[in-house]
Amino acid sequence: MTTKVAIIGSGPTGIYTLHGLVRSAVPLSITIFEVEADAGKGTPYHPDINDQAMLANIASIELPPICETLVEWLRRQPDAELQRLNVASANIREREFYPRVVLGEFLQSQFQQLIEIGIARGHSIDVKSRHRVVDIRLREADIQLEVTMPDGARKDYAFDHVVMATGHNWPESTEIRPGYFMSPWPAPALKTIGPCHVGILGTSLSAIDALITVATAHGVFYLDAGGQLQYQASADGEGFHAALMSRKGLLPEADFYCEYPYTPLQVCTPEAVNALIERGCANLLDDVFELFRAELVACDPDYAAKIGLALVTVDTLADAYFAEREAADPFTWAAANLAEAEQNKRDHYTVPWRYAILRMHEIIARAVPHLDQDDLKRFHGKFKSVFVDDYATVPHQSIQRLLALRRAGRLEILKLGRDYKLDADGVARGAAVHFDGRRVAFDAFIDATGQASMSARDMPFPGLIEQGVIKQAATPEGVLILDESDEAAFTRTGGIDLDAAFRPKFAANLCNRLYCAAISFLLHKLPFVQGITSAHEIGEVVSKAILDDVSADQREPALMLDDA
Image (cartoon, rainbow, N blue to C red; front, top):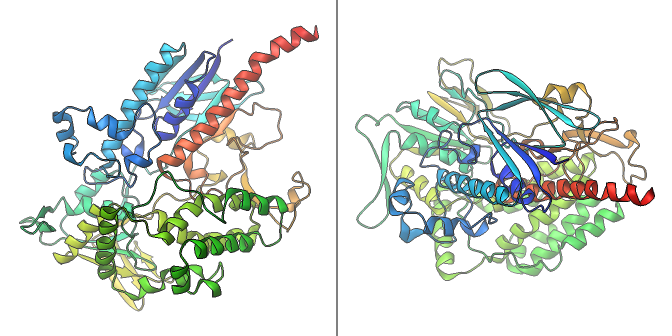
Protein backbone atom coordinates (compact mmCIF):
# COMPACT_ATOMS: atom_id res chain seq x y z
CA MET A 1 0.00 0.00 0.00
CA THR A 2 1.11 3.58 -0.66
CA THR A 3 2.53 5.32 2.40
CA LYS A 4 0.36 8.25 3.47
CA VAL A 5 2.13 11.34 4.82
CA ALA A 6 0.52 14.47 6.26
CA ILE A 7 2.34 17.80 6.63
CA ILE A 8 0.58 20.30 8.88
CA GLY A 9 1.67 23.72 7.64
CA SER A 10 3.07 24.90 4.32
CA GLY A 11 5.66 27.40 5.56
CA PRO A 12 9.42 26.95 5.18
CA THR A 13 9.68 23.81 7.35
CA GLY A 14 6.80 22.14 5.52
CA ILE A 15 8.27 23.14 2.16
CA TYR A 16 11.73 21.75 2.94
CA THR A 17 10.12 18.55 4.26
CA LEU A 18 8.22 18.23 0.98
CA HIS A 19 11.48 18.94 -0.87
CA GLY A 20 13.03 15.89 0.77
CA LEU A 21 10.00 13.66 0.31
CA VAL A 22 9.55 14.20 -3.43
CA ARG A 23 13.04 12.78 -3.97
CA SER A 24 11.67 9.37 -2.96
CA ALA A 25 11.78 6.74 -5.69
CA VAL A 26 8.81 5.05 -3.99
CA PRO A 27 5.48 6.80 -4.72
CA LEU A 28 4.00 8.54 -1.68
CA SER A 29 0.58 9.98 -0.93
CA ILE A 30 1.24 13.42 0.60
CA THR A 31 -1.46 15.68 2.05
CA ILE A 32 -0.61 19.23 3.14
CA PHE A 33 -2.96 21.03 5.52
CA GLU A 34 -2.80 24.84 5.54
CA VAL A 35 -4.96 27.23 7.58
CA GLU A 36 -4.46 30.13 5.15
CA ALA A 37 -6.20 30.38 1.80
CA ASP A 38 -2.94 30.62 -0.16
CA ALA A 39 -0.56 27.84 0.79
CA GLY A 40 3.20 28.01 0.54
CA LYS A 41 4.11 31.42 1.98
CA GLY A 42 4.50 30.85 5.70
CA THR A 43 3.42 33.20 8.48
CA PRO A 44 6.70 35.18 8.74
CA TYR A 45 6.45 36.08 5.03
CA HIS A 46 2.72 36.29 4.35
CA PRO A 47 1.37 39.59 2.95
CA ASP A 48 -1.65 39.47 5.27
CA ILE A 49 0.69 39.29 8.27
CA ASN A 50 3.60 41.52 7.23
CA ASP A 51 3.89 45.10 6.09
CA GLN A 52 5.72 45.85 2.83
CA ALA A 53 8.31 47.79 4.87
CA MET A 54 9.25 44.76 6.99
CA LEU A 55 12.62 43.32 5.95
CA ALA A 56 13.84 39.73 6.11
CA ASN A 57 17.24 39.32 7.77
CA ILE A 58 18.48 36.55 5.50
CA ALA A 59 20.20 37.21 2.18
CA SER A 60 19.82 35.08 -0.93
CA ILE A 61 23.30 33.62 -0.50
CA GLU A 62 22.24 32.10 2.85
CA LEU A 63 18.95 30.60 1.64
CA PRO A 64 19.23 26.85 1.03
CA PRO A 65 18.02 26.42 -2.58
CA ILE A 66 14.77 24.60 -3.17
CA CYS A 67 14.20 24.46 -6.92
CA GLU A 68 16.26 27.61 -7.54
CA THR A 69 17.93 30.39 -5.55
CA LEU A 70 16.15 33.59 -4.59
CA VAL A 71 18.36 35.61 -6.96
CA GLU A 72 17.63 33.24 -9.85
CA TRP A 73 13.90 33.53 -9.17
CA LEU A 74 14.01 37.34 -8.92
CA ARG A 75 16.00 37.69 -12.14
CA ARG A 76 13.38 35.82 -14.14
CA GLN A 77 10.50 37.98 -12.85
CA PRO A 78 9.04 40.55 -15.30
CA ASP A 79 9.58 44.24 -14.55
CA ALA A 80 5.94 44.71 -13.55
CA GLU A 81 6.23 41.98 -10.92
CA LEU A 82 9.47 43.42 -9.52
CA GLN A 83 7.80 46.81 -9.31
CA ARG A 84 4.88 45.27 -7.41
CA LEU A 85 7.34 43.66 -5.01
CA ASN A 86 9.26 46.95 -4.63
CA VAL A 87 12.51 45.35 -5.85
CA ALA A 88 14.83 47.28 -8.16
CA SER A 89 16.34 44.99 -10.81
CA ALA A 90 19.72 46.73 -10.39
CA ASN A 91 19.75 45.71 -6.70
CA ILE A 92 19.23 41.98 -7.23
CA ARG A 93 22.35 40.50 -5.69
CA GLU A 94 23.27 37.50 -3.55
CA ARG A 95 24.01 39.56 -0.44
CA GLU A 96 21.02 41.90 -0.57
CA PHE A 97 18.06 41.84 1.82
CA TYR A 98 14.46 42.00 0.63
CA PRO A 99 11.04 42.59 2.19
CA ARG A 100 9.54 39.61 3.97
CA VAL A 101 6.66 39.49 1.48
CA VAL A 102 9.18 38.95 -1.34
CA LEU A 103 10.40 35.80 0.38
CA GLY A 104 6.78 34.73 0.74
CA GLU A 105 6.24 34.99 -3.02
CA PHE A 106 9.50 33.13 -3.64
CA LEU A 107 8.61 30.33 -1.22
CA GLN A 108 5.15 29.92 -2.74
CA SER A 109 6.68 29.65 -6.21
CA GLN A 110 9.08 26.95 -4.98
CA PHE A 111 6.22 25.15 -3.24
CA GLN A 112 4.21 25.02 -6.44
CA GLN A 113 7.23 23.80 -8.40
CA LEU A 114 7.81 21.02 -5.84
CA ILE A 115 4.21 19.87 -6.25
CA GLU A 116 4.67 19.68 -10.02
CA ILE A 117 7.97 17.80 -9.62
CA GLY A 118 6.43 15.42 -7.10
CA ILE A 119 3.44 14.60 -9.30
CA ALA A 120 5.74 14.06 -12.29
CA ARG A 121 7.68 11.54 -10.20
CA GLY A 122 4.55 9.55 -9.39
CA HIS A 123 3.62 11.00 -6.00
CA SER A 124 0.07 11.98 -5.10
CA ILE A 125 0.06 15.48 -3.53
CA ASP A 126 -3.09 17.09 -2.17
CA VAL A 127 -2.97 20.64 -0.76
CA LYS A 128 -5.89 21.40 1.55
CA SER A 129 -6.01 25.16 2.05
CA ARG A 130 -8.24 26.68 4.74
CA HIS A 131 -8.15 23.39 6.62
CA ARG A 132 -7.23 23.55 10.31
CA VAL A 133 -5.98 20.46 12.15
CA VAL A 134 -7.63 20.68 15.56
CA ASP A 135 -6.53 17.39 17.10
CA ILE A 136 -4.10 14.51 16.70
CA ARG A 137 -4.37 11.04 18.21
CA LEU A 138 -1.87 8.23 17.88
CA ARG A 139 -3.16 4.73 17.20
CA GLU A 140 -1.24 1.48 17.09
CA ALA A 141 -0.74 1.41 13.33
CA ASP A 142 -1.40 4.98 12.21
CA ILE A 143 -2.16 8.56 13.30
CA GLN A 144 -5.60 10.14 13.24
CA LEU A 145 -6.13 13.83 12.47
CA GLU A 146 -9.30 15.73 13.22
CA VAL A 147 -9.64 18.58 10.72
CA THR A 148 -11.96 21.57 10.46
CA MET A 149 -12.85 22.19 6.81
CA PRO A 150 -13.60 25.58 5.15
CA ASP A 151 -17.36 25.16 5.73
CA GLY A 152 -16.84 24.51 9.45
CA ALA A 153 -17.54 20.80 9.27
CA ARG A 154 -15.09 18.34 10.82
CA LYS A 155 -13.56 15.28 9.27
CA ASP A 156 -11.14 12.58 10.43
CA TYR A 157 -8.14 11.43 8.39
CA ALA A 158 -5.62 8.64 8.98
CA PHE A 159 -1.92 8.77 8.02
CA ASP A 160 1.19 6.63 8.39
CA HIS A 161 3.40 9.68 9.09
CA VAL A 162 2.42 13.15 10.34
CA VAL A 163 4.73 16.19 10.37
CA MET A 164 3.79 19.09 12.65
CA ALA A 165 5.35 21.97 10.69
CA THR A 166 3.16 24.58 12.37
CA GLY A 167 5.99 27.09 12.71
CA HIS A 168 5.54 30.18 14.85
CA ASN A 169 2.61 30.56 17.19
CA TRP A 170 1.18 34.08 17.03
CA PRO A 171 -2.14 35.13 18.59
CA GLU A 172 -5.13 35.58 16.31
CA SER A 173 -6.17 38.71 18.20
CA THR A 174 -3.16 41.01 18.67
CA GLU A 175 -4.69 44.03 20.44
CA ILE A 176 -5.64 42.35 23.70
CA ARG A 177 -6.39 45.67 25.46
CA PRO A 178 -7.04 49.11 23.98
CA GLY A 179 -3.74 50.24 22.49
CA TYR A 180 -1.83 47.19 23.80
CA PHE A 181 -0.52 44.83 21.11
CA MET A 182 0.98 41.56 22.32
CA SER A 183 2.76 40.94 19.01
CA PRO A 184 3.95 42.91 15.96
CA TRP A 185 1.90 40.53 13.81
CA PRO A 186 -0.36 40.79 11.97
CA ALA A 187 1.28 44.04 10.88
CA PRO A 188 -1.91 45.60 9.42
CA ALA A 189 -3.21 45.89 12.98
CA LEU A 190 -0.31 48.23 13.79
CA LYS A 191 -1.46 50.55 11.00
CA THR A 192 -4.46 51.41 13.20
CA ILE A 193 -2.16 53.08 15.75
CA GLY A 194 -2.61 56.83 15.51
CA PRO A 195 0.10 59.52 15.56
CA CYS A 196 0.85 59.19 19.27
CA HIS A 197 3.53 58.16 21.78
CA VAL A 198 4.35 54.53 20.89
CA GLY A 199 6.34 52.16 23.09
CA ILE A 200 7.92 49.02 21.63
CA LEU A 201 9.35 46.37 23.93
CA GLY A 202 12.38 44.87 22.20
CA THR A 203 15.15 46.16 19.95
CA SER A 204 15.58 43.25 17.53
CA LEU A 205 14.60 43.27 13.86
CA SER A 206 11.03 42.36 14.84
CA ALA A 207 10.84 45.47 17.01
CA ILE A 208 12.43 47.59 14.28
CA ASP A 209 9.93 46.26 11.75
CA ALA A 210 7.05 47.11 14.10
CA LEU A 211 8.46 50.63 14.48
CA ILE A 212 8.85 51.11 10.72
CA THR A 213 5.32 49.84 10.11
CA VAL A 214 3.90 52.52 12.40
CA ALA A 215 6.32 55.19 11.15
CA THR A 216 5.35 54.68 7.50
CA ALA A 217 1.69 55.08 8.48
CA HIS A 218 2.47 58.63 9.63
CA GLY A 219 5.26 59.76 7.33
CA VAL A 220 7.76 58.82 4.65
CA PHE A 221 11.43 57.95 4.31
CA TYR A 222 13.29 59.71 1.50
CA LEU A 223 16.83 60.32 0.25
CA ASP A 224 18.07 63.90 0.61
CA ALA A 225 20.32 65.70 -1.89
CA GLY A 226 23.37 64.13 -0.30
CA GLY A 227 21.98 60.60 -0.61
CA GLN A 228 21.26 60.23 3.14
CA LEU A 229 18.01 58.63 4.27
CA GLN A 230 15.67 61.03 6.11
CA TYR A 231 12.18 60.81 7.64
CA GLN A 232 9.39 63.35 7.26
CA ALA A 233 6.15 63.10 9.25
CA SER A 234 2.93 63.74 7.35
CA ALA A 235 0.79 66.77 8.08
CA ASP A 236 -1.43 64.81 10.46
CA GLY A 237 1.44 62.70 11.83
CA GLU A 238 3.20 65.30 13.95
CA GLY A 239 2.17 63.57 17.15
CA PHE A 240 4.11 60.41 16.28
CA HIS A 241 7.03 59.63 18.56
CA ALA A 242 8.37 56.21 19.49
CA ALA A 243 10.65 54.50 21.98
CA LEU A 244 12.39 51.17 21.55
CA MET A 245 13.27 49.60 24.89
CA SER A 246 15.12 46.62 26.32
CA ARG A 247 17.01 45.68 29.45
CA LYS A 248 20.37 46.73 28.03
CA GLY A 249 19.01 49.52 25.82
CA LEU A 250 21.17 48.38 22.89
CA LEU A 251 20.41 48.38 19.20
CA PRO A 252 21.35 45.35 17.08
CA GLU A 253 24.40 45.76 14.88
CA ALA A 254 24.44 45.95 11.10
CA ASP A 255 24.87 42.80 9.03
CA PHE A 256 28.58 42.14 8.53
CA TYR A 257 30.38 40.77 5.50
CA CYS A 258 31.81 37.25 5.81
CA GLU A 259 32.81 34.29 3.70
CA TYR A 260 29.98 31.94 2.81
CA PRO A 261 29.80 28.95 2.99
CA TYR A 262 31.58 29.13 6.35
CA THR A 263 35.24 28.19 6.51
CA PRO A 264 36.13 25.48 9.09
CA LEU A 265 37.09 26.44 12.62
CA GLN A 266 40.46 25.47 14.09
CA VAL A 267 39.73 24.54 17.71
CA CYS A 268 35.99 24.67 18.43
CA THR A 269 35.11 21.99 15.92
CA PRO A 270 32.15 19.58 15.82
CA GLU A 271 34.56 16.75 16.65
CA ALA A 272 35.92 18.58 19.70
CA VAL A 273 32.45 19.36 21.09
CA ASN A 274 31.23 15.82 20.37
CA ALA A 275 34.22 14.43 22.28
CA LEU A 276 33.28 16.48 25.35
CA ILE A 277 29.68 15.30 25.12
CA GLU A 278 30.71 11.64 24.83
CA ARG A 279 33.04 11.98 27.79
CA GLY A 280 30.09 12.96 29.96
CA CYS A 281 32.21 15.39 31.95
CA ALA A 282 30.93 17.21 35.02
CA ASN A 283 31.78 20.65 33.68
CA LEU A 284 30.50 20.38 30.13
CA LEU A 285 29.56 24.05 29.73
CA ASP A 286 32.85 25.30 31.15
CA ASP A 287 34.84 22.89 28.99
CA VAL A 288 32.92 24.00 25.90
CA PHE A 289 33.65 27.60 26.86
CA GLU A 290 37.37 26.77 26.89
CA LEU A 291 37.04 25.67 23.25
CA PHE A 292 35.24 28.96 22.54
CA ARG A 293 37.99 30.94 24.24
CA ALA A 294 40.80 29.13 22.43
CA GLU A 295 39.09 29.58 19.05
CA LEU A 296 38.53 33.29 19.60
CA VAL A 297 42.17 33.78 20.62
CA ALA A 298 43.34 31.87 17.56
CA CYS A 299 41.09 33.85 15.19
CA ASP A 300 41.47 37.34 16.65
CA PRO A 301 44.06 37.71 19.45
CA ASP A 302 43.74 41.51 19.44
CA TYR A 303 40.01 41.38 20.14
CA ALA A 304 40.53 38.68 22.79
CA ALA A 305 43.02 40.94 24.56
CA LYS A 306 40.73 43.97 24.20
CA ILE A 307 37.86 42.37 26.13
CA GLY A 308 40.17 40.60 28.61
CA LEU A 309 39.13 37.17 27.40
CA ALA A 310 41.86 35.44 29.42
CA LEU A 311 40.16 36.49 32.66
CA VAL A 312 36.47 36.06 31.81
CA THR A 313 34.32 33.02 32.45
CA VAL A 314 31.20 31.71 30.77
CA ASP A 315 29.27 33.75 33.36
CA THR A 316 31.10 37.04 32.73
CA LEU A 317 31.67 36.87 28.97
CA ALA A 318 28.47 38.79 28.13
CA ASP A 319 29.49 41.63 30.45
CA ALA A 320 32.87 41.93 28.72
CA TYR A 321 31.36 41.54 25.24
CA PHE A 322 28.74 44.29 25.70
CA ALA A 323 30.71 46.64 28.02
CA GLU A 324 31.98 49.14 25.43
CA ARG A 325 28.66 49.23 23.62
CA GLU A 326 26.66 49.77 26.81
CA ALA A 327 28.87 52.72 27.71
CA ALA A 328 28.18 54.48 24.39
CA ASP A 329 25.11 56.32 23.13
CA PRO A 330 23.17 53.67 21.15
CA PHE A 331 22.65 55.90 18.11
CA THR A 332 26.29 57.03 18.03
CA TRP A 333 27.35 53.39 18.19
CA ALA A 334 24.85 52.41 15.50
CA ALA A 335 26.11 55.09 13.11
CA ALA A 336 29.75 54.08 13.59
CA ASN A 337 28.97 50.37 13.31
CA LEU A 338 26.94 50.94 10.12
CA ALA A 339 29.77 52.92 8.53
CA GLU A 340 32.21 50.12 9.39
CA ALA A 341 29.89 47.42 8.05
CA GLU A 342 29.29 49.30 4.80
CA GLN A 343 33.02 49.81 4.27
CA ASN A 344 33.81 46.17 5.03
CA LYS A 345 31.14 45.08 2.54
CA ARG A 346 32.69 47.25 -0.16
CA ASP A 347 36.17 45.90 0.67
CA HIS A 348 35.00 42.29 1.11
CA TYR A 349 36.67 42.34 4.53
CA THR A 350 35.61 39.96 7.31
CA VAL A 351 36.04 40.99 10.96
CA PRO A 352 37.71 37.88 12.45
CA TRP A 353 36.09 37.85 15.90
CA ARG A 354 32.58 38.41 14.53
CA TYR A 355 33.02 35.58 12.05
CA ALA A 356 34.45 33.25 14.69
CA ILE A 357 31.47 33.72 17.02
CA LEU A 358 29.04 33.33 14.12
CA ARG A 359 30.55 30.02 13.09
CA MET A 360 30.73 28.71 16.65
CA HIS A 361 27.10 29.16 17.63
CA GLU A 362 25.76 26.11 15.81
CA ILE A 363 28.67 23.93 16.89
CA ILE A 364 28.33 24.86 20.56
CA ALA A 365 24.57 24.31 20.28
CA ARG A 366 25.36 20.58 19.98
CA ALA A 367 26.19 20.54 23.68
CA VAL A 368 23.03 22.30 24.92
CA PRO A 369 20.73 19.22 25.07
CA HIS A 370 23.38 17.50 27.21
CA LEU A 371 23.82 20.27 29.81
CA ASP A 372 22.64 19.55 33.33
CA GLN A 373 20.00 21.70 34.97
CA ASP A 374 22.39 24.30 36.41
CA ASP A 375 24.48 24.63 33.26
CA LEU A 376 21.40 24.90 31.07
CA LYS A 377 20.27 27.83 33.20
CA ARG A 378 23.74 29.43 32.96
CA PHE A 379 23.77 28.98 29.20
CA HIS A 380 20.39 30.63 28.67
CA GLY A 381 21.07 33.36 31.21
CA LYS A 382 24.54 34.42 30.03
CA PHE A 383 26.38 32.65 27.22
CA LYS A 384 23.53 32.54 24.69
CA SER A 385 23.14 36.32 24.47
CA VAL A 386 26.58 36.73 22.88
CA PHE A 387 25.73 34.36 20.04
CA VAL A 388 22.26 35.82 19.53
CA ASP A 389 23.69 39.34 19.29
CA ASP A 390 26.31 38.22 16.79
CA TYR A 391 24.03 36.29 14.41
CA ALA A 392 20.93 38.49 14.78
CA THR A 393 22.45 41.44 12.97
CA VAL A 394 20.04 43.40 10.78
CA PRO A 395 19.98 44.77 7.23
CA HIS A 396 21.86 48.04 6.72
CA GLN A 397 18.62 49.67 5.61
CA SER A 398 17.08 48.94 9.03
CA ILE A 399 19.85 50.87 10.80
CA GLN A 400 19.57 53.68 8.27
CA ARG A 401 15.86 53.98 9.05
CA LEU A 402 16.51 54.11 12.80
CA LEU A 403 19.06 56.87 12.36
CA ALA A 404 16.68 58.79 10.09
CA LEU A 405 13.94 58.62 12.73
CA ARG A 406 16.42 59.79 15.36
CA ARG A 407 17.51 62.77 13.26
CA ALA A 408 13.86 63.67 12.80
CA GLY A 409 13.38 63.68 16.58
CA ARG A 410 10.93 60.77 16.42
CA LEU A 411 12.83 57.99 18.23
CA GLU A 412 14.55 57.29 21.53
CA ILE A 413 16.02 54.21 23.18
CA LEU A 414 15.16 53.31 26.78
CA LYS A 415 17.42 51.16 28.95
CA LEU A 416 15.04 49.39 31.33
CA GLY A 417 17.44 47.29 33.41
CA ARG A 418 16.40 44.00 34.98
CA ASP A 419 13.87 45.31 37.50
CA TYR A 420 11.47 47.22 35.26
CA LYS A 421 7.71 46.85 35.68
CA LEU A 422 5.15 46.93 32.90
CA ASP A 423 1.68 48.22 33.79
CA ALA A 424 -1.08 47.71 31.23
CA ASP A 425 -3.99 47.68 33.67
CA GLY A 426 -3.55 51.09 35.29
CA VAL A 427 -3.87 53.04 32.03
CA ALA A 428 -6.83 53.66 29.72
CA ARG A 429 -4.81 52.82 26.61
CA GLY A 430 -1.39 51.35 25.87
CA ALA A 431 0.86 50.77 28.87
CA ALA A 432 3.20 52.45 31.34
CA VAL A 433 6.74 51.31 32.10
CA HIS A 434 8.38 51.83 35.49
CA PHE A 435 12.19 51.73 35.56
CA ASP A 436 15.10 53.48 37.23
CA GLY A 437 12.75 55.63 39.30
CA ARG A 438 10.84 56.80 36.21
CA ARG A 439 7.37 56.19 34.87
CA VAL A 440 6.86 56.52 31.10
CA ALA A 441 3.36 56.14 29.68
CA PHE A 442 2.59 55.20 26.08
CA ASP A 443 -0.65 55.69 24.19
CA ALA A 444 0.13 52.52 22.23
CA PHE A 445 2.39 49.66 23.26
CA ILE A 446 3.75 46.74 21.20
CA ASP A 447 5.41 43.66 22.69
CA ALA A 448 7.99 42.75 20.04
CA THR A 449 10.13 40.38 22.10
CA GLY A 450 9.56 37.51 19.68
CA GLN A 451 8.37 33.93 19.83
CA ALA A 452 8.45 32.48 23.33
CA SER A 453 9.67 28.95 23.93
CA MET A 454 6.68 26.64 24.27
CA SER A 455 6.43 23.45 26.27
CA ALA A 456 4.31 20.31 26.55
CA ARG A 457 1.47 22.15 28.29
CA ASP A 458 1.18 24.48 25.27
CA MET A 459 0.53 21.65 22.80
CA PRO A 460 -2.59 22.70 20.80
CA PHE A 461 -3.69 19.10 20.18
CA PRO A 462 -5.53 17.79 23.29
CA GLY A 463 -5.52 14.17 22.09
CA LEU A 464 -1.73 14.00 22.40
CA ILE A 465 -1.91 15.38 25.94
CA GLU A 466 -4.62 12.91 26.95
CA GLN A 467 -2.57 10.02 25.57
CA GLY A 468 0.44 11.09 27.63
CA VAL A 469 2.82 10.98 24.67
CA ILE A 470 3.89 14.62 24.96
CA LYS A 471 6.30 15.27 27.82
CA GLN A 472 8.53 18.16 28.76
CA ALA A 473 12.11 17.82 27.60
CA ALA A 474 14.53 16.48 30.18
CA THR A 475 18.06 17.42 31.09
CA PRO A 476 20.56 15.42 33.17
CA GLU A 477 20.16 15.86 36.93
CA GLY A 478 23.65 14.73 37.81
CA VAL A 479 27.12 14.58 36.36
CA LEU A 480 27.11 11.31 34.45
CA ILE A 481 24.04 9.43 33.29
CA LEU A 482 24.63 5.72 32.97
CA ASP A 483 21.05 4.64 32.40
CA GLU A 484 18.92 6.98 30.30
CA SER A 485 15.79 5.01 31.22
CA ASP A 486 16.15 6.15 34.83
CA GLU A 487 13.63 9.01 35.11
CA ALA A 488 15.07 10.04 38.50
CA ALA A 489 18.34 10.95 36.81
CA PHE A 490 16.70 13.72 34.79
CA THR A 491 14.99 17.04 35.47
CA ARG A 492 12.09 18.12 33.29
CA THR A 493 12.77 21.53 31.78
CA GLY A 494 10.96 23.15 28.85
CA GLY A 495 10.19 22.24 25.27
CA ILE A 496 9.13 18.73 24.29
CA ASP A 497 11.04 15.49 24.80
CA LEU A 498 12.01 14.44 21.26
CA ASP A 499 14.44 12.02 19.68
CA ALA A 500 17.01 12.94 17.02
CA ALA A 501 14.34 12.79 14.29
CA PHE A 502 11.99 15.12 16.23
CA ARG A 503 9.66 12.29 17.26
CA PRO A 504 8.11 12.47 20.77
CA LYS A 505 9.58 9.96 23.22
CA PHE A 506 7.03 7.69 24.91
CA ALA A 507 6.69 4.08 26.05
CA ALA A 508 3.09 3.39 24.97
CA ASN A 509 2.44 0.88 22.19
CA LEU A 510 1.41 3.55 19.70
CA CYS A 511 2.58 4.69 16.27
CA ASN A 512 5.84 6.64 16.70
CA ARG A 513 5.76 8.39 13.32
CA LEU A 514 4.68 11.81 14.51
CA TYR A 515 7.32 14.52 13.94
CA CYS A 516 7.25 17.72 15.98
CA ALA A 517 8.98 20.15 13.62
CA ALA A 518 7.30 23.26 15.09
CA ILE A 519 10.03 25.74 15.99
CA SER A 520 8.27 27.15 19.05
CA PHE A 521 8.55 23.75 20.79
CA LEU A 522 12.26 23.31 19.98
CA LEU A 523 13.74 26.55 21.32
CA HIS A 524 14.54 25.40 24.86
CA LYS A 525 16.98 22.66 23.90
CA LEU A 526 17.79 23.98 20.42
CA PRO A 527 18.21 27.69 21.23
CA PHE A 528 19.37 28.79 17.79
CA VAL A 529 16.56 27.12 15.82
CA GLN A 530 15.29 30.18 13.97
CA GLY A 531 14.65 31.16 10.40
CA ILE A 532 14.79 29.47 7.02
CA THR A 533 18.17 27.75 7.45
CA SER A 534 16.83 25.92 10.51
CA ALA A 535 13.65 25.06 8.61
CA HIS A 536 15.83 23.48 5.94
CA GLU A 537 17.79 21.42 8.47
CA ILE A 538 14.66 20.21 10.24
CA GLY A 539 12.94 19.39 6.96
CA GLU A 540 15.95 17.38 5.81
CA VAL A 541 16.06 15.37 9.07
CA VAL A 542 12.33 14.66 9.10
CA SER A 543 12.03 13.74 5.42
CA LYS A 544 15.04 11.40 5.71
CA ALA A 545 13.50 9.67 8.73
CA ILE A 546 10.24 9.16 6.82
CA LEU A 547 12.00 7.83 3.72
CA ASP A 548 14.14 5.51 5.86
CA ASP A 549 10.93 4.06 7.31
CA VAL A 550 9.40 3.75 3.85
CA SER A 551 12.48 1.88 2.63
CA ALA A 552 12.33 -0.45 5.64
CA ASP A 553 8.65 -1.13 4.99
CA GLN A 554 9.44 -1.95 1.35
CA ARG A 555 12.11 -4.46 2.40
CA GLU A 556 9.98 -6.17 5.07
CA PRO A 557 7.76 -8.29 2.75
CA ALA A 558 10.84 -9.60 0.94
CA LEU A 559 12.38 -10.64 4.26
CA MET A 560 9.19 -12.43 5.22
CA LEU A 561 9.23 -14.36 1.92
CA ASP A 562 12.85 -15.36 2.49
CA ASP A 563 12.00 -16.57 5.99
CA ALA A 564 9.16 -18.63 4.59
